[in-house]
Amino acid sequence: MKHNVVLTVSALLSRLFMTFHMTHDVIRQAEGAVTYPIPVLVFALWLYGTVALSGRVWGYVIMLVGGLFGAAMIVVHAHGIVVGKSGGFFFVWTLFALSTTGWVTMILSARGLWTAFRARRAT
Image (cartoon, rainbow, N blue to C red):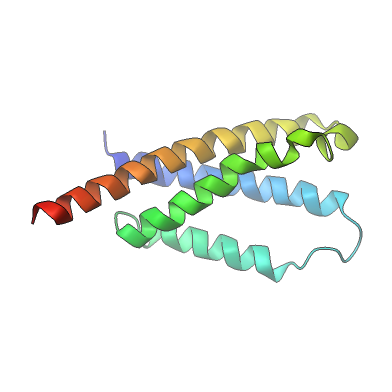
């Protein structure tokens, strides 16, 4: 099994679920409370790290940070602030899916970083 392919797929799924999550957050916030260009730039960097830098150290780092943010979303919303008010099935499902794919992305990117550093040390 190609671990880089699995990592790329899990990172892309995390990004997809994160866009669903951010869409829910934007809908539930007050008008004008969100600055739209910032998430777009972050998603673009995350996508570039996943697609163009796959298999490189910087790609692993970007995917690791993205996976960390994805995994943390369920913890951020665990206090019931948004989940309690929304009660939306799709919002809660998105949190579970995002956290799961975030953890997989973190684990696989940490493994890729470890392998890359071990290979550099061996040479």
